[in-house]
Length: 369
Length: 262
Image 1 (tube, rainbow over the protein chains, first blue to last red):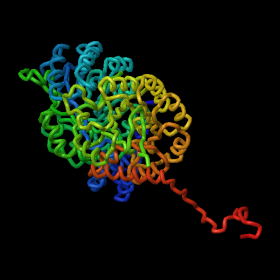
Image 2: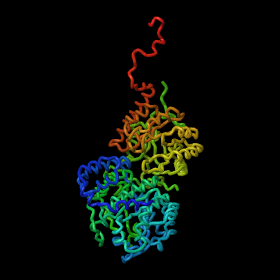
Image 3: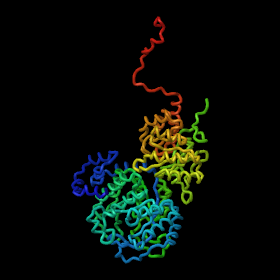
Image 4: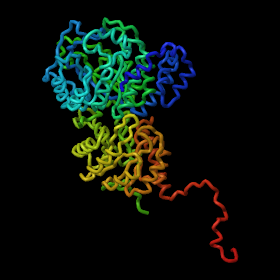
């Protein structure tokens, strides 16, 4: 069994036809249900449901407060390496980009860890490009073991691994993973991933499942909204999350909604997700999966992020740098993976969360094996 | 009349509302809620305690005189629960431990088997063990013989606010357990807390309904009143509700009549 078999069930499904047929009554009915079916979820993702945003937001807020309380879990990304053998047309680390490539030594990782720890952050997410030559398993395990000494929770956002390698990292102290499918549409997927191991759609699709099976307690998935028709990508993201929740009861599932920043980069996505659509997608996800974490990164601007914490968001990155060595080596050219639009410090983000009546949570885990 | 106290381990509690530290909009609300409710025991997840003190220390918000009940939230099996309990004790959190082993992140159902295993180990190590379980009488009896100081059956899934969905199963525990029965999880309203106490629960633990209320302080006070009312009714031996009208001339009345029918 793989989530792929669920995607296949929708191969012939007429999404535009379905969306065109959604009525106000259907939206009201789906909105009122306690447990939403995939069809209810699709109804709430329809253009028609965009007219019911306020009602969706109210229910999303109520469910989020019920299951998560008035709290926001904070984490910080740490880029270890930007070496990459993939050619993803939208990514700053694309192997064809003439950027300064480097990876942190273990000593440098420790220096970055100290700098991050000084901000009070306790949950760290480390990232690399996909280059098993530059960042092999041995390097990743040592990095994890090093970070474990400074942080309560260590997660990875790296290339997909085989099951034994997920277990290896889990034993080294990693407790969570983030991996975006980028798009669930296979045709678009092949069009934007031109070379490298990332061209293998299925291997990537099944990776969160391999991580969950290996005992990672938290799995964060997502699609890079804009590559393909976003309503469909959000729909499959939600179904993927529910599949993981149903199959791996002991795994906490979280969902990200990364989207292209209109202003940033030379890549022009086929679709742009505006703020109202973003809120619709996020609240629909909350209604479909009341217990799933919703992660909002610093791709989103400060003002917008402050509003989202009332609408279902539960996990925020803060004080982020998306360049290798970004926390200590300010003079080095940064070549970030993506542009950050919320540039506030950890302290400023925490203060904003408090000002909005929520509690910033720095620590909510212990790696106890 | 002697004071109605609940004794757990070596501590006596006059207030039978236990509370939690999760889900509050700010830790500063915790001491206010404790003062308003009079709650004398509060649970805290060890995973939330930052011993490095790089961020805010949640323990600093729990006044002296309130007993700390560290819990093993995050444990997926008995071994992890045991490890967390030992860490909690070493961190100075005392001997109380609420065992929470959850392998189901969807409904947050406790894993009764792993919970029993952890109880067996920790009770031997001198912990005052309060296991959080699905209400299952044979299991509760085994927990009791393993040395649990109480059993904590759930009323409904954590955070669900659905009340006493497991009422008839909890009633069996109340009737048959020697150790105190503390209803934990699912209680969303003061009236539900009162109902649990009326049926003979020894205490209730309420977190979500208080922490996520618009005014946690006032809601804590409301729950405390409800728990007192329910307890008082239980002690006063509540009359069982009856579906049939009681005949004013009892059917067996003749047995007590004298030969003259008087």
